[in-house]
Image 1 (cartoon, protein in one colour):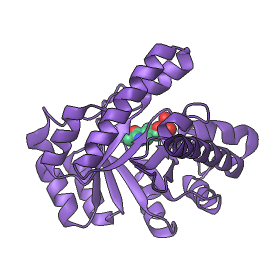
Image 2: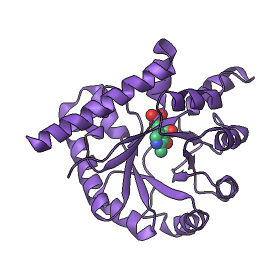
Image 3: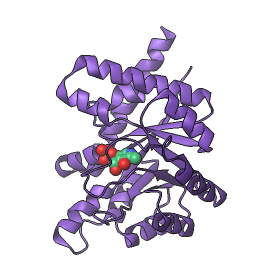
Image 4: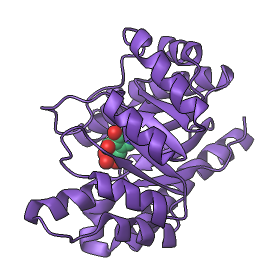
Length: 256
Ligand code: PXP
């Protein structure tokens, strides 16, 4: 299949992490979101965690009001977060697992075991016009479960692939890419829109961007890390260039 355009959603959580390290107001995640949009981000992502360790309620309110791009609201499937999402009606809500003690989102959502709990949350968000995405492990049976739950979008967890890239484990990189590819293909065939994210860097994004079924990548930490040295616009431009190079290579490969 030929690849459709690939959107970049910029996650601004770690601008808030830095702000919260000192209290006060700087750096401002909303200003970062504005800079990201000016540099070509297609959307902004923010995760309001139960413990408010980075993004806070006022940040999401402002992102919704002040940013002229789709907001992807990452949330745990709790009554509190559902209430906030239904009030703010962001463009999208990405349901993620959340454990208090974790440093970042570890592993995908258990949508097979959590079916009974998730179905009404997905239903209520959908009725409110919020596009629901499920952050899941890239497995074929999980695509089936997402379809059965009625979510229009899945975001494939790229964390294990990215760890293999960092470890220089070529065999694991290949097997993880194959797992991502099978899940993307199967999910797409079932009618799901396919997104991916977690841990992606300019060095690892290319082969993921090359998957033709992908419509959106959500990236945060690596962009903010590079922004310290090069500035956020340059970091976003470099990520986009790496995404486009991966996408082009795949298209050239298909044509060859
Ligand atoms: N997608 C989801 C669902 C996430 O939870 C995260 C991390 O907040 C990301 C994407 C972005 O990951 P990273 O910050 O490692 O780029």
